[in-house]
Length: 79
Length: 245
Ligand SMILES: NC(=O)c1ccc[n+]([C@@H]2O[C@H](COP(=O)([O-])OP(=O)(O)OC[C@H]3O[C@@H](n4cnc5c(N)ncnc54)[C@H](OP(=O)(O)O)[C@@H]3O)[C@@H](O)[C@H]2O)c1
View 1: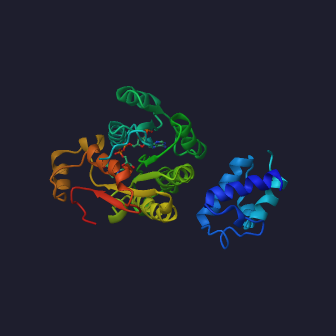
View 2: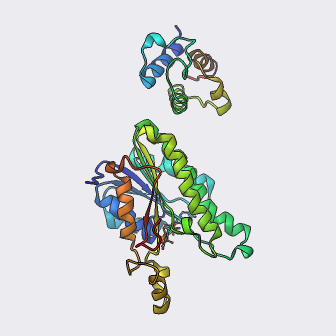
């Protein structure tokens, strides 16, 4: 697992309080991990902070699974 | 009750009559207070009077950039933000048919749009901290209307709707969003009234007196306290019974 993937999953586990084994690449934040719409906004804010990137609203809308977040951040993260 | 020790509060319009009373009340309960307004000397004077636990963060709320810098400045000064009080407000009265666009826009910009931007910034940091108290100062006029104040009444009613929408969004994060709606409050403006004018106003106030900044501040203090955690989306009217709504 890439370093970015690991950090993303850690944030998701901490933030949503779910078991690490549930946080697979295909896991959908809302349907599989029980996030509400506010949680998804907070996750995006947490990713922005952790990786020092800005995630614009239109990009944020396409991040619906853990894998989406990892892919976006692997492409755009500065650190 | 209502101990605010360790809480960090930003108060806009702290140079005004009501805002000064609010800042004093929060400070007296132990809060650290960031004082905002446009008049730096007046802010410095208030900070000097209060002593420790105060910061001066001037900002012109008609200026988008200044508004956007205010919450970050307060956070940087205090190391966080638990309480936001949107108190700054202006009037530009005119009869509806004569009201100019500029009069409308000036009032909406300071009373409503600046409050929106401050709340948007504040709620981000409050979400992270899982705690927040937002209180906006409306007016009885936002509910009852008042001739010559179409712009002002709209801005104050707007604060109420906006606060309810945000309250619903963030209630699960232990953040409350409420309004305090004063009636007639003593101010330099009301001091200038003659006896007859004063009498005719008081005829409509069952309490038989004008309100004071302290009356308003006490309501703000309650809503800003931990104890008021189950009160959200509410408007607390402080008007001596002038309008029982
Ligand atoms: N007094 C009443 O009877 C009454 C009744 C109902 C509601 N209210 C509401 O209570 C609040 C306080 O009123 P008040 O009687 O204390 O009024 P005030 O004495 O005139 O104070 C108004 C405050 O707003 C600030 N302000 C105005 N324009 C601003 C701008 N562009 N940028 C930043 N700050 C600005 C002023 O700061 P600077 O002077 O430093 O610019 C001042 O501190 C207002 O929202 C008002 O609508 C008052």
